Image (cartoon, rainbow, N blue to C red):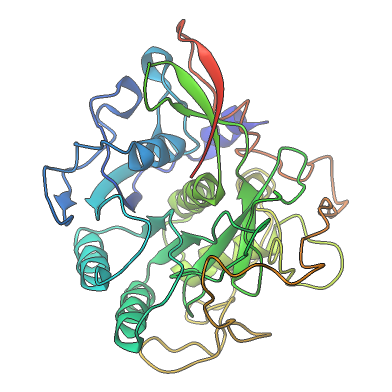
Length: 364
């Protein structure tokens, strides 16, 4: 998929990506020397390297794995991962103060990209929602980017979640290897970008070996890694400029833009790194939320406000299931839908070694 060519231009060196998740097991060969000292903000702290869930570890490997000793080869092997452990729960409850503390810690440690491969649904009090918004605002006001998964309930109740639906957060949806939106990918006005989120190798939770994984979590990690590659190659660009060229160089959706299924399109970092495409434009204008002012009430997107949060058990209305169709290419060259860095099987590959591949699907 051309990742080896892309790495001649950029590996993500010099960029720190904070992984707000369940911790990162930095003893794995592919993550050795890739992970900084972080902090455990979970309710029962045992250290960031204690990842009993495995989710955060898999996200870190997708982003920055080196492929060493048969481990997962990530998209941005020059990146340093900052593990910020916030627990394994899938609902916020009263943990929004933890989210805010974690965000501030990551920014204080120099993270330029926040990877939040989770999507919380259900009821949130107004005070809790405001804390989440405050965290997203601080990311933007301090010149960083936050990518958040939109969720995996697109083929059921399709609930709107947090923080992906908040102004300033960049919601990421999932597509398969052909560029077709994943049936499970939650859709709506909160979707900003899309990336592959199916058929990705990860560590089996039990029994060793490798398992096929998928979800908007992985799509988010691939998007964070792509942003890191671009930012490393253009260190003087601002967060707004990095995001702008990512939006400009996507494989655009059919029909109107943004699409509720893939937003402004499927990311293609090689268009920027190899072909020199994209105009960074204004340094201080958010291309996704042009009226957004961190800390002030603003529209969630240029075209539509966020949908009200729904219970994850609320079924979709009849006919609300997405019609899966591939995005259309820009026709400018031979680079196909996803181009480089996101061909999953080729790029996020196992770096050799004799471990068994288990086709055990795990969507996260």
